[in-house]
Structure formats: structure tokens, C-alpha cells
Length: 166
Image 1 (cartoon, helix red, strand yellow):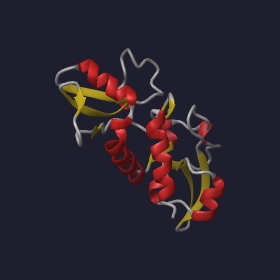
Image 2 (tube, helix red, strand yellow):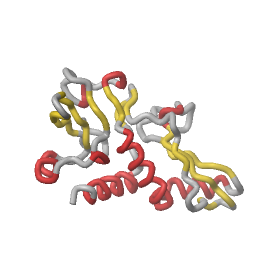
Image 3 (cartoon, rainbow, N blue to C red):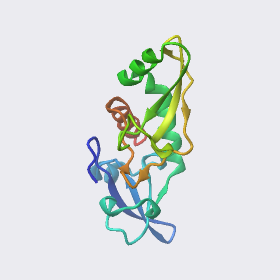
């Protein structure tokens, strides 16, 4: 499935004796050469679904290892995202800034909780180090598609996933 930032690929693998369909952003040549680390598997696709483009949320099971990996990366790197720093400056005093999933239909309107990736604390208009809190209600796949990160975080995610392959 093409998003504006990434392709997702489906890999058929046997886990024990069961055929499973794993969804990953890693390219097929990389997966063939290095394999897929648990962190590189976004989730499991229901058997019989033709691929990410045909996938619905009820045909997809999120991988907890990937979710942890994603939030750890965001906690480390969210502070380099210009849009988040600009929002913090706009808050001015104290509060929280939400990191929104770019797939959300109306980011300036009523954002569903499944499209809030997490939040970062703001003090005196600046982001507070080590204050990122993931949103347990965020979903990797909704009716609006797979999660979409700001470009800086997307690049960081792919870089870190490649590092797990060595």
C-alpha cells in the first residue's frame, strides 16, 4: 500500500506450522537478505486478504513489539519535528501538544482518539525533554488507512528499523 511516505509489504511466512501474513515497511530485498526483526513487523494480516490495500482494521492485528519500538523512537526524536516545536511555542505557557497521525481527515477539527499518536508536555513554550506519552488508543490501521508520521519521524523510523537488521 502506498502512503505519501512509505510502502508496506506483505510477507508470507510460517510461524511454527501456521502460515502468517506479516506487514512491514522494509523492502523485499532487505527482508530476504536480513530477515524481519520483531520490531520491523507492523502487524499480522488475516489470511485470505489480498494485501494492504484491501485490509480493513478488523483484518489486522497490531504487533506489540512494533508499537513499543515506534513509541520509543518517537519519545527520542519528536523534539526534532518543526511542527511540534511550533505548536509548543504557540501554547506559550504550560500544557501539552498532541502528535497527530497525518492520516486524520481534519487535523484542525474533531480528531478521533485513534489518530492521536501521543502527547508532549510544554513548559514556557518549549517541549519538555523525556515527557512524551503514547496514546494507548492510537491505532496503526483505521478506516482512513495506515498510520502516517511527520517526515522527520518517518525517516527516523526507517533508519532505526534498518539498524535492527544488522
